[in-house]
Length: 296
Image 1: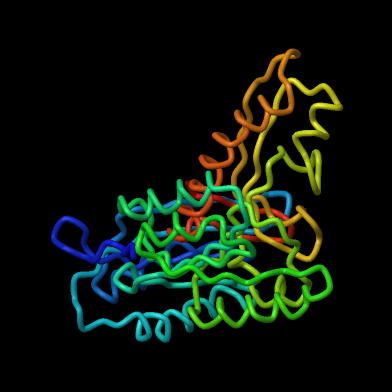
Image 2: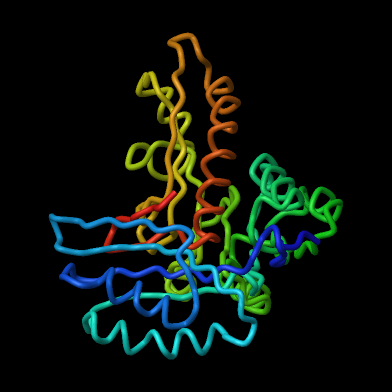
């Protein structure tokens, strides 16, 4: 089973603050003063002010060496700062010393699963891959080869509601920070989309909003496009329409077959999904409305 990097002298503990709020004066000063008061110092800071909406966004990584300061204490103390910034402020404080976990949902395609398992084994993600859940057994041997538990949940045509209930029970039992649909070829029902909002991440094999739904490479082939792409996005009840985390494209030729497009598209899918997963786990993605701010 893959594990996250624990804080050491080479990888010291970091607290990560993300904040979105109506823009006003004094926000950065309030945050900086708070960080100084708890004995921390800023090692990374990113800011964005959206003039079209009047909202301000920031992500700040804070080094704090004292083990006596708990993340719960930091959150409790920062709550008053956030309240002073404004009642609409949305924020989170996370601690890199607290290990995160991920559950992957898969079907038959192996490329995204293989890539994520390999990257996690190399320590590229600050998380443990706790389990893989598949509606087919095709990827069980690959999963267990990495020491990760595999749960098989069949999806009969007349029993999908029961199957999704079983999947939810398995996934929720791990209490993961992210649920990754790594080419999971089932559409999540609305109740799961709501329960996993902000944690469920999908890779769609097209450059959204083009070619929503099934067989996007075949749709692209029929349309005669010159670029194909992939999109990593949060899952919502609206099919393939959740807030976009990452996208990329690759040029293709007029003489490509659909098989050529699928082959080339797999490379884009793995890269786009791995970036999106890493940025989510590193608390670099802030969602607002149908959009995201990604401090990559």
